[in-house]
Amino acid sequence: MDTRRIALRGLAAPLALCLVLVGGGCGGAGSEARVSPQGARLAALLDSMHVESHWIAGHHVHWRTGEPDGHALAPIGQHSHCSAFVAAVSLKLGVEMLHPPEHTQVLLANAQCAWLRGEGRRSGWEPVETPVEAQRLANAGRLVVACYVNPDPELPGHVAIVRPEALSRHRIESEGPQVTQAGVKNFRSTSLAEGFRHHPGAWAKRAVRFYAHDAGYLGQRHRGPGGVDRLLGPAAPPPVHFPSARKRHGGVALGFEGAARAEHTATQRPDAEHDHVRGDRDAPA
Image 1: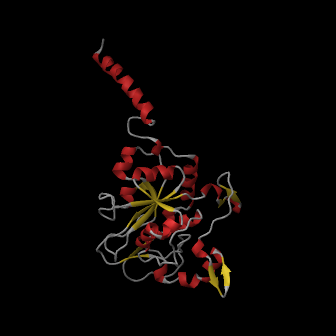
Image 2: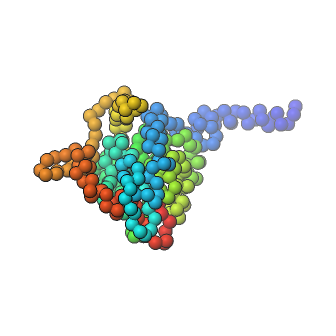
Image 3: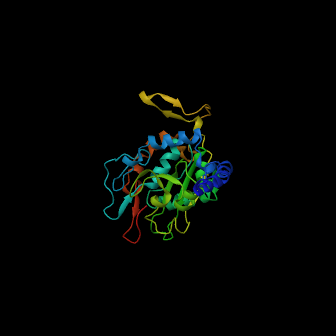
């Protein structure tokens, strides 16, 4: 008998066993590789925000929409909007996140990371131990933020949204979870290693931290074609608002939209709408 046939026959049983045990083939793909229907809807929402044509670096933008607002940037440094995009995604899902004007976009990514470690815990954010677990939770439809604090407090960190994606464990451990982000370059979908590459050591030294929120995504309403609201899932819980967004203006309690209008002037300050990168000591987010 041909020795090649004997060799292939000898491999058949171990290969079949590997496929059964791992659930995704011998490449190491397991449960973290499967994207649930909730995860697919989360990915669709991220795509609907068109990050590659909004929150563009070098432009003064409104943090919630990523649209240029016509205001001039400060004359020095470079400007990107990673933290504004993360805040905008959180707003879409009714999840509290530090955002302008509670904190200007100057070094907002570092501030968001600190907020997630502290006050964010009281708002439902939980730390995630590993990149593999972060990808698994995103694939299940949970909102997961990847967060890097710059060791130099005068320079920006970086934040991104972990994107649902079918990846093997080996791929996650080598290049990180998949992310959607704004930054010097905006990505609808890229590896964390690529998205954070302007921060040497962020991924290589495993300095990126992950936080997840059990967002009520399935019950949120999304503006569909023709301006008609549609449910993204079967449940319809009461709408969720940022608790901190209930401001008082002239003695009257305002919801998020009213508070935003009352603070419109404040949010137009040049230092309130952009991440500011000082000098050339570090690459921007």
